Amino acid sequence: MKKACITGTGSYVPEKVLTNFDLEKFLDTSDEWIVTRTGIRERRVAADGEYTSDLAAHAARRALEMANVEAEEIDFIVVGTITGDFPWPATACLVQDKLGASKAIAYDVSAACSGFVYAIDAAVSRIESGRSSKALVIGAEILTRVVDWQDRNTCVLFGDGAGAVVLEATEEDRGILSTHLHSDGSCWELLYQPGFGSRNPASDDGLKARLPFLRMQGNEVFKIAVRSLSDVAIEALEANGLTSTDVDLFIPHQANRRILDATAKRLGLTDDQVYINVDRYGNTSGASIPIALDEANRAGRIKKGDMVLLDAFGGGFTWGSALIRW
Ligand code: ACO
Image (cartoon, rainbow, N blue to C red):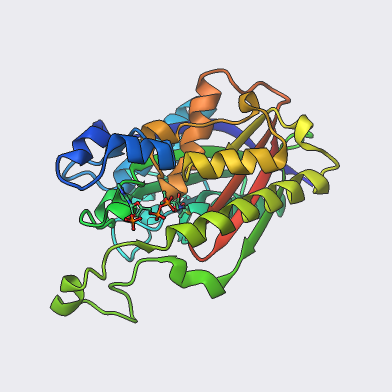
């Protein structure tokens, strides 16, 4: 059976930097509180007129360039996002148009912060079954447009960005070794966006009640996130007969520093095995893992043959891991 191999990575973050000190100017918060509780120092904010499909297309072009693949060769585009340009059509279709990837089929995956790992799983299935040979897998978000800037409990945590990989079929014994996904819909109310879907359709009252903005019960999410991230990372290692010492680079969803540290500790990973950039971008949901992967790749932190473990947790709840031999 063919394997799916990452042949190019790319990422893009908007130019505008919003620091914790900038937040202090309009919110009852402090740099000290945010850094201590989350490790976040700054995040990026998309410009007026810049949309999720723009961020995704920028990241995708960089991944295509690295892979030396033309957009017309791509047969599958999947975007993990919960902040697409529109509720529909899929942002993946808009990206297809922007890239001129006319041969591709394109759709979005809605799995919140696990969106990229879920999207990888979809692309791996298509490639391993022979239905696709060159796929573009993207995580892209503009969360700053769905957070409530009056709610200090949540708005300080999130940021905007996009990351992408090109996945190609290979006969070599490397690439995505396995993916492991889980969902638990019983916890949906701990992290969600109440409006405006079919349950709370658009209305002036709904806007006054701030329904279009993200809501989260942070303490509860924290505990479940650490447990789930650890369990599904161990699941990936055990499925491949490995232990945490075999991991060259662990790339977890960049939710916040305390979640990352607690997860790494449970897994027995050392600091130099774990990639962290949450300090610079905050939580970019589905975009966080592919941004980190691209940064690590371009910085030379990943070499051929390295074992890379991706690990995600997000609203739904959804969680998942992907083990890669680079
Ligand atoms: N600035 C200053 N004070 C604040 C802020 C802020 N930005 N936000 C909350 N506080 C206050 C609260 O009002 C509360 O005050 P009180 O004691 O007077 O009531 C106090 O700080 C403590 O609040 P807690 O919510 O208990 O703070 P906690 O230590 O739990 O930290 C946090 C909150 C950072 C959100 C934490 O719960 C957390 O990290 N949760 C995980 C959330 C997360 O990362 N979610 C995303 C993961 S899943 C995904 O990525 C989709």
